[in-house]
Image (cartoon, rainbow, N blue to C red; front, top):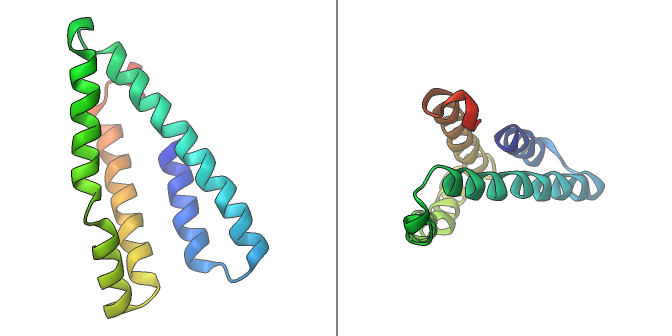
Length: 111
């Protein structure tokens, strides 16, 4: 559900040109984050041994931070080189890849 909201968000940011629509999209952005983070943490805690939960949560947070560190730089370079649509399309591609991986790799009970 969160990834679906992410696709709607990227499409909305790409096509919108009014402040009220951007405000509405900010609400969609908040819902997207509010549905992803708790679900991700719950799944991680439910499928990990109780003695390793803190370590796994820390490793996930560190990995997420390391992977997301260059995102503003890459987004800025895409914007500068190709314009407004490029970082949005790159984000949409990442969201679609994530959605495909969720559908393909997670067992039905974890989705």
